[in-house]
Length: 263
Ligand code: ADP
Ligand code: MG
Image 1: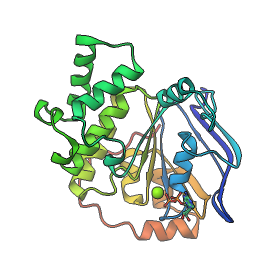
Image 2: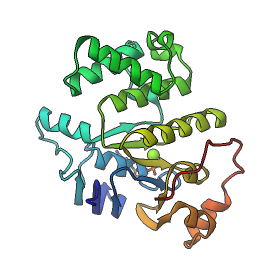
Image 3: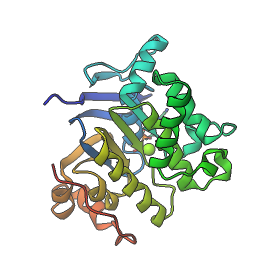
Image 4: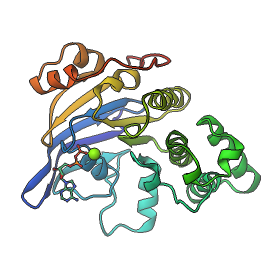
């Protein structure tokens, strides 16, 4: 099978600081890969490079056979890349317009990225909102009247409207209470069980990883220091840095529906 995402020797510098330093990774269609590391390890920069929000200094990115749009790319190329990968941020306020009702935000994404119109578009909007567990009252609400978890559900529905092959989740559950984290993680597990979608799940919290991702890479100072199956890396970390991360994992205060399928 052909890789969905191939990243080779990616490097990004800010001034004399190297935020991403020779990162290589591969993601197969439908695979869930976690990227873990402490704050400042280069996770967000990696996500922004993959989704085309930043341009690398060197290295190669291929997503579904195409590179991310460069700074001078035409709008059509940006739209095409948005259909390959969608980014969900820690703070949903970043991806949701505060004046826009949640249902309208999802409908807008459908109108922009799919041929659906009229009743068919509305049906798809309602289906997406239902899939993320938002009811019709919440669909008519603006972001600020919803809870953090509901806002993140809305951001996920909006991202799914595009039918991306890859969802990049950058600390998407970091700002939520532990019980709400579990709900969102379980939601992501269910979403992947019913459609072909790959996750690049970025987190500083190694404890969440095995519930969602089969595989993990550990980043430190812009480099990948360890990679492997989540179950192996968590139970038998090889790099001393990974060991400190594993030792700092608190006992999970929530019960996930099930662990991620080993593929
Ligand atoms: P993480 O997401 O793992 O916390 P980041 O990718 O955000 O890490 O940052 C990696 C390093 O790059 C940090 O030292 C950060 O300060 C630096 N950095 C990130 N973005 C910028 C930027 N736009 N300008 C300057 N430095 C940046
Ligand atoms: Mg970050």
